[in-house]
Length: 274
Image 1 (tube, helix red, strand yellow):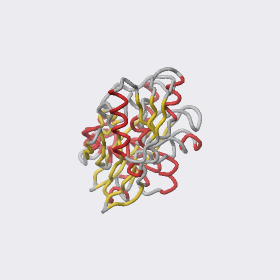
Image 2 (cartoon, rainbow, N blue to C red):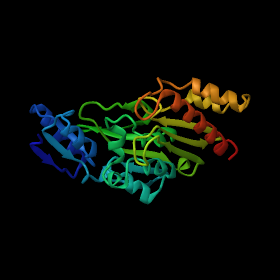
Image 3 (cartoon, rainbow, N blue to C red):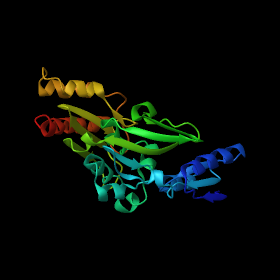
Image 4 (tube, one colour):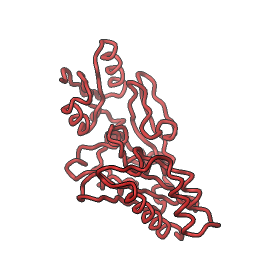
């Protein structure tokens, strides 16, 4: 049961409140859209007694260009990302998550930091070498996303994801994003693929292929090797997938591999010559 609800207007107020409630023996939790938290709470898969709503904090609502970087806050919803469309690759990925009603609530931070392993919104951030800002207590830090994300967001207890910064050059680079489902139009994905070409190099990231989202530089190296034929690129890239291929109700391992090969071929056709 949630006994206390707070809606701070300053970042420090939120992080200090979290720390205070922990010291008092409570179970505080930050939330933005709250879609996943409400579901998991009803299923008794998480416990909390203090809800700290971050949506009134300006720092997590930023959604604009700042000195050559696209700055986007953790509490920006997927619908807002689609509407403003400042980073087209992020828009393409975000608009395929769930349905419109859910995207009105689901936030960038909620998708990336959530327990549901797809976390598709992180793919464009991995491809664009994004920087992220996090806060814990009075400490505010900026790091490369790759130092804070490995299969999932690596946040310390009480640490909050505040915002991400993407260098402007990535916003206009050639890209492709595809989401493949075996079932209905808004069901969980079989595979989500995102690719971006920068400095004449194709970058790749996937969700739904393994039990975690990832960018694979090993797969990229194979796909960008001019000395390999297309078949060799596809075969070696598939062999370089950095984890066990999922085999679940959304699709078998064999079917995912079939879809992956088609996606890689489509990425090559779309980006190799641009």
